[in-house]
Amino acid sequence: MTVPPEQPQYQQQGLPACVRHSDRPTGLRCVRCDRPACPECLREASVGYQCVDCVNEGRRTVRQATTVAGAVQRDQLVVVPVMVVLNLLLFAFTAFQAGDLVNNSRSELFDEWVLWPVGVVAFNEPWRLITGGFLHYGPFHVAANMLALWFLGREVERALGRARFLAVYLLSLLGGSAAVFLFGPVGAGTAGASGAVWGVMGSVLVVFLRLKLNLQPIIGMLVINVFISFLPGISLLGHLGGLVAGVAATAALVYAPRERRTQIQVGALTAIGVLLVLAIALRWADLSSTLS
Image 1: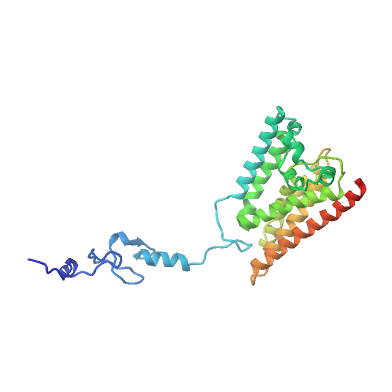
Image 2: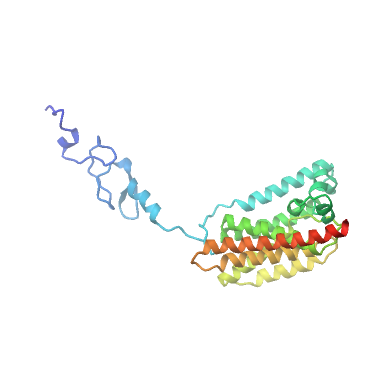
């Protein structure tokens, strides 16, 4: 039998054509839109099969799960691993420069980056307020901070979302540095991610409060770390400054009302950052007049 040129083959078979492939006759249909679709264009659904167009439309319209802070919930961690690797790499580099694993603070990079209030003002080196939070005195120091960041930070990053967790981490770091700069000895060098880590501990506390979870493990951990902070060579000011900044930043995130939540969160975090910068600026002016 000859098929007329103007009549497609699928019409001879009595079957409609796939909506995406007009040259493919099919007896299958999408359970959602009821359009004919070939096996290549169908995807298994909870009931029957849906065409790829309906599957893609469903993905766009289904509301994604969000965290307690309103961020899209993602299981894959990014910020915590990056921070841990960055701190470890910088420690390895300073140890290499110094030629000494324990006395890595003798390296040139350590001298240029450590938080030294006199150096910040006298040599106009404000970056020390940030870079000091990525340096560590010896392997035990960096190991203790990175282990704490790894075990606590993962939960906080999942609870807040990547961008919000990064904001809390950096504000906590700056809060710890600001406390040292404002109230610490001006001639002493301070380094370590402890301020940021304490901010993460405070963040865990706030998240647990918001979710009404058992606080006993967190409170016990804080008490132990407060005791450790009084040991010689430990910066209690850096720890407390980071804790206060972390608690304030996290509270602003998780207690912001749903209406205009993102705008309120951005405004609150910006305000915390501005307050820290203003406090640093006032102390800077005071130190400048003292040193001049």
